[in-house]
Length: 76
Image 1 (tube, rainbow, N blue to C red):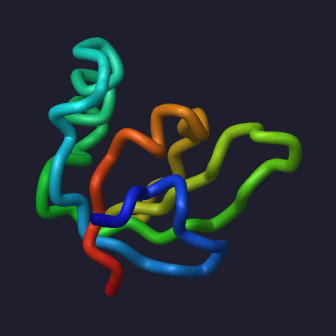
Image 2: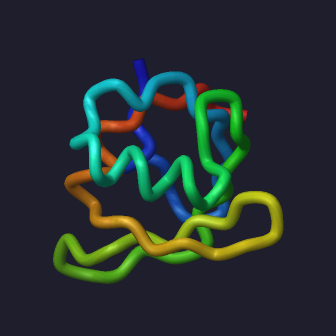
């Protein structure tokens, strides 16, 4: 099992499970078009546990590291 928060910059993954997320965060991601089966690429990781920048379907999204560590992915 690999978590989104453990991917390195430039790595890609396919979202497998969002069930561990808080319902409001999950709703936000779904509203932005990110759901199970979506492919994401890590575009940036801020230092000191700051947010991560993801790219999915041509849009960039910031997500907190602690939330990214609750999203299960399959590395591509």
